[in-house]
Image (tube, rainbow, N blue to C red):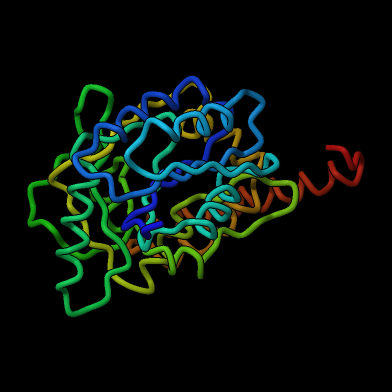
Length: 274
């Protein structure tokens, strides 16, 4: 089987009802030299069966892996280890792509290959269901080399990243017992330390919406449930922030996470099932 240029990696948990929209957007792509790799994170619906049934109807490769429910970050680790593409494009199960997304990514990767320095990834904007860009407008030069933290502060909106598979494999998400979340920016920043990220902020290739049970709407609950993962991120972020206000905010969050870690450890000692 021919090796695909790109792995579109979708970690999912109980999203059988949203996956058809993503699948349809993949079928609508202008080019099909990619694989769709779905990692089912212990879903209780028929996600895995549905994905397997998609295989005969596609012009691209479709695979599904299943693991015990461990969190999105562990599902990403699982998917990266199994990915066949040289590049990995993470697309969540409740989102979908524009018809030219793979074409745009391929063109950006070809452009990145001509740069004298090593490029660790490329990045585009995300848009809402209506096509409007997430976050602040950008009118500067494109593409440009930057870091996830820097550009995140600049646009204040969601971004769609494509990373080299070998770097993602070398920098897996840490797995913390009893926790199911680590902020993605923790790893994205570390990947950028190994090579530049080429940003294309003039266009969106990815549509997304905020669901009621999604991460964005449940930040505080996630912080309490997974304080160790957030502590790793915020403690490292202190040194990445260019201004004292950002460093103070990251330090305060670190202390908050540390307090939650202590409280969680005490609760576990009182009741190991907690």
